[in-house]
Image (tube, rainbow over all chains, first blue to last red; front, side, top):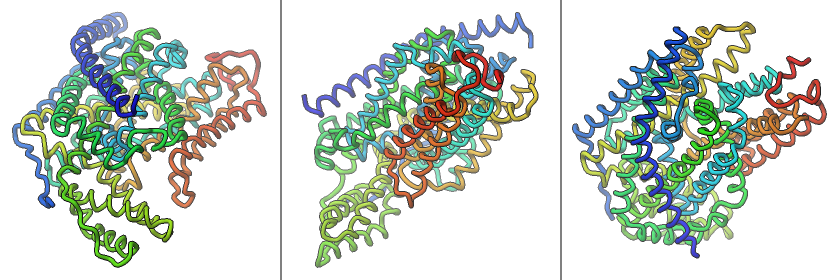
Length: 49
Length: 564
């Protein structure tokens, strides 16, 4: 296998995984941020500053 | 030959898109301030970070305009060989993610900074020494970001140079505002928003590059310019460079403060490990995608260049001098106006003539080095000039919004990372009295402000001596080798002692500094590898000669000072 082919495959993997993982982050991230806020809110109620 | 410069089509619409993205980030960042009550909230978001926002936060912090620029520069000068660095990053992330190497143990200790571990395992002195080196190396590393990024923004947006300083100051102040007030919670939330902009900008630029030059055009450009060197990393970069990169990336992924803070902020060690596995592929893209932009820029400007007539000097040596004199006159102006299609062939020819002449006339080596430096300068600015030339209005605004998001998230992440070390690991231990939680919070906020002021001043007064990629790696290497060795040794070797750790930091840092002294003529890979070798030697010899106080102790137990 030539170097040129190796680098083409590497780039295809890099770009497609970047796109797919970015989409997953965009979709799942909102729920995780809500969860984080809820946890911080809960902690604030338990231990007021 | 084309001699017309490039003028960015950046319009009011583009400016409005970029400004709106900035305001949205600032608004989101400031809104979460109310959640900050303790130093744990501030530095590690009460360790409540999930997998996907963790990955977004990690990548946003480690990707700025400067990252895109130096990676594109690397692709421009080394061709596809540069890709090996991306593969190394992926391999290291997968290794860390699968095995939990270092990160699991540190996460379980519930520490806030890496040097904090050194006090627990070695002594307060080692903590402060590590903190000082990290603060100096990290701040110097961060200090050139605005210098490089200002050039990108000037080219892509066409902002006149007299307003650049103010523009960079405004960006730093936006990052400062929400970082100082909201700490890690602000960072996590803004990093998510910024990641969406950053990813969109990255995808747009990549598709435009591929459409503009095509993959085969890039392959031809690399073949034409570099031959086999542009494809074979061992031939081009050498084994020494590759070994150093492997070591450096292991350190970056485990003990680099801004990365480690993400590990410390995860819900638990398992989420931390999964975050690294997921982020490995994003880090592969972080390297390869902008490298492809750099190669596309090479193909783009090479494609626009007309063949260059050879200089008319009677001998090769006279031709070289003639060409160098011509470049001295025109190079800077061409670079500043985007006439890279005119500068590049001249630099290429000078480098080729000087290389051929070197065996007969040793002084030709000087011209070859000068040509290589100029090629590096072109490489740094080729990508932004290409974007200014090919992106249409509207799309340009989206890309600038993505780049600004990338940049501000990096400033914010690094402000918090390095200031937490200055406050927690240098100032607080030296005060010799316990600070309250609120006191530590205030101290860290004040340090964030002070660091921002330093970065603003440093970026105004400092001039970069060579390629940005090497400067960044050397300043990082000032503490990376000894930090990783002292952490790994502390975790996995019972005999590791404070003397060994301190010696490791002194020797590792001294070797890295050797690169910055031009008279010593130490190349970057040798300085890097030597730094690792001496840091290991210092650690082992110091630990064997002066064993730790007490015995049978294990990592994470009390410090040597506490035992003594």
